[in-house]
Length: 582
Image 1: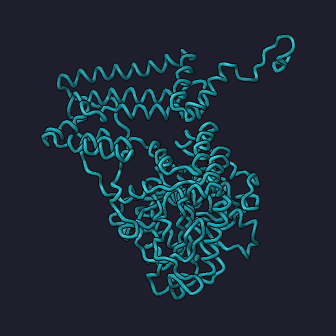
Image 2: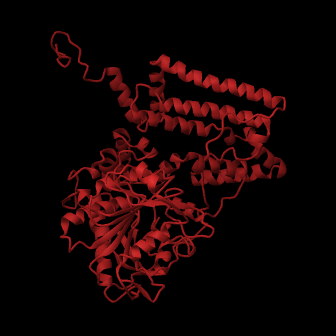
Image 3: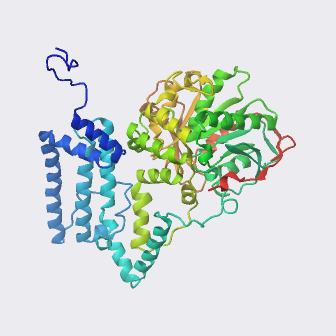
């Protein structure tokens, strides 16, 4: 008898959730859409239902504890003993020598790390749960464990207590003042709000706003050489933050570096949307954003094609535009000759830790919030990104501001990071659902954007793709999959830079070199491991290789284009007006 025929013969319908499961699911969606606690409860129940696996995991923890007991005994008698549990290489919480030199603090550190590492491993290996649920439960456990680290408490932090003694209590007084400052700001500040002024300290490269519509201002930078390459570069920045991450200051500015190398550079500065822009769609960002920027640059310079660059979500838009344009235009009419992506996802199957915020319940919760405001507030976005790296972006400042009484450093990247923007309701809902949740961008003709079915396989223009080794927003191995998406005939040069999502890109030449990069040209179906094994590792910055690559493809040298001209007169000096909107 069929299990679905619940009305015949008293059979049981196993295809539906039980009333208890339905109630639990409804409560989860209503109370905990991001799975902060329910994911941990699910993991606990799963372990209790697999006692043999639980016993094996407990045995591994017992082995660590026995080894720690021996270590404690040796340290107590002054016998040299190597650490049983060591912090991960990127864990700076226990870097101070006090955590190793002092037997007491060393023991506290290692007991905390032993439980932390074992519990995290357990949740990553939870039997009976999907991969996503295991990752989600491990993620939220890691956030809880980070919160209760001994470094976050005055009486368990030897560095804080030593600072208190050395300053005769002044450090805690300053810490209290810092705490009151952050209570007033309703945030744990990473940089003072008035540490920099955009247009004075940041975004200072001279240029003119030569085009403006409801979505963007297009800035053209003043030339710094007598001659420039005939083909201009159009940079599509992410609208999740402001454009000046690529123009922080004279030493770090990518746009200044490009102009100094003889390129004509345009860049998008996006409008910070308010409730009136709730209905703005992803299609609008393509048509009124990147398509208009390309058109204006071509007309401004009197050339048929440009080199197009996209960064982060701006890169996802550029990839979509390239597929759109390859269907919209004939090969001769297409206004982009070649393109570059910086840390860009096109295949969202494994987007990294941010995946814990992506499912129907979480997106519905965000959509409900956006429906009341017309946008997603920039503070909400910033909080999510800080949660992804809570030790370095939350608890580091908790310790240094409140326990050590330090003043906030005037760090330009952090100032840019907190200068957040809003996301229009319609665009952001579409982006989360179609890209992250359903991964439809890589599916041929699944999406229709700006009137055209989108198929990345139509893209045949040469691509230069840059990724970052420690990128937690756009993991490089996932970014690499663009090679499988674009046409087999499209030449591609792939770069893996050291550092993360920002500093892997904001990576100016310095001596001696601070960073390095791997570079090579992947084949259509080449796995990232094979590419990495044969890629050439070079010291320094990929900026040098990229400008050489661009120089070979952007035409002959011509008289430098002025920052503005008669057809496109200056509407404002760079950095424009949109970037100043809060």
